[in-house]
Length: 219
Image (cartoon, rainbow, N blue to C red):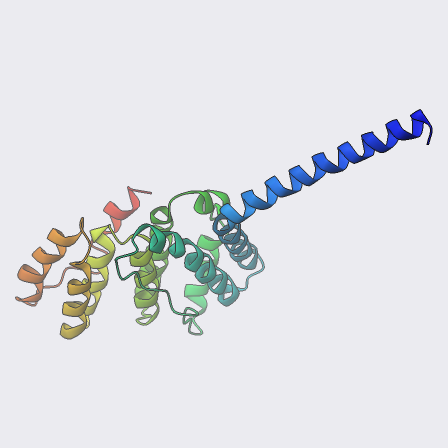
């Protein structure tokens, strides 16, 4: 083999090594950040589905994105009972709520929601639940607010909003169960205990959406 051919072979081999190292590095980066990439993919698909006027599909992708984000919460709090969302959100045939949902979901920032802590995604699901309640949908808020709780379990507002919703529906046992669930978490514990003693025991619910302003000022 001539010196020229040997030099070309060494150069080619060196390039292959560099490419392999880059590939290995990118693969390790993806494996370490796969939840970010998967949640970004699902948030983006939800965004595109909304732009294509497919509300149910948009909700299904939001649900999948939430499940990916909640994996991070579970890893951070291995000793706490972080609930996994329902497999799919229940949307009835309501054209008014679909229009509102499409307006919200098509304007979400997929990258920011994916890269931020799961808590930052919780208000999105809370606001969608509040929209459902305003349109006289009573199953969907429960599903969306439970998702918000799983994403932001250390925020008392999400626990209280769901408990307060149950109390407004005269679901005393569900209200008590939700508040007792809240008591396992450090930061919302005192607020939930106060609601348990003052509002549940006297059957004095607040207006649904009472914590909306406080929740949205934290976005």
